[in-house]
Length: 114
Image (cartoon, rainbow, N blue to C red):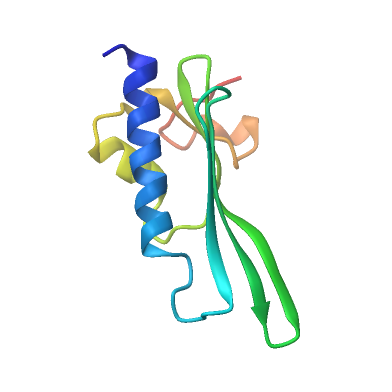
């Protein structure tokens, strides 16, 4: 299995794990939705629904793969999704914490990815 296929497999597994677990299982009117686009290498998990009269709609997790690196665009997990990716065999130098400004990424211990 080449590197891209391995990264796709790992990212899909991690995102699906959170989709099954659910972003907010305590609220039956708020659902977890998952979008996996293997062609464009984009993986999203979001929640939608209602909390009383308030509309709930937002991205919980967004990961992309580009230029041989995994880009964590948004991470709403409490553990840090990058840590789970590392546990599954993806090196830190191939993970970009894209939610940090480019100038600060050098201090994260992860890839800068410009």
